[in-house]
Amino acid sequence: MEEEIIFNIDVMLAKRKMSVTELAEKVGITIANISVLKNGRAKAIKVSTLAKLCEALDCQPGGSVGIQKEGIEKFFRNS
Image 1 (cartoon, rainbow, N blue to C red):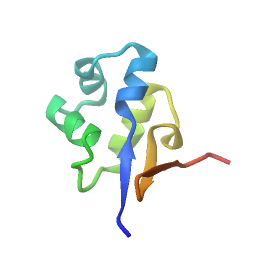
Image 2 (cartoon, one colour; image 1 turned 30 degrees about the vertical axis):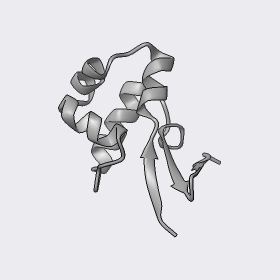
Image 3 (cartoon, rainbow, N blue to C red; image 1 turned 90 degrees about the horizontal axis):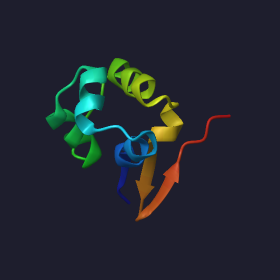
């Protein structure tokens, strides 16, 4: 069984009417790295980068990150 962590950046950007370019500038990473996260190709992410993404998108990690398991998305929920 293969699981992967997914980043719902497209959904978060759409809700905030924010462009990928604007997000990249706010977080301080390249547009290419935002794309890597969006497309599920990231091998790792620094906690500090995740914190900056959450700050820029005004969300909690559970709102922007989930686990995809056997084609079903399961999102973290903050207790």
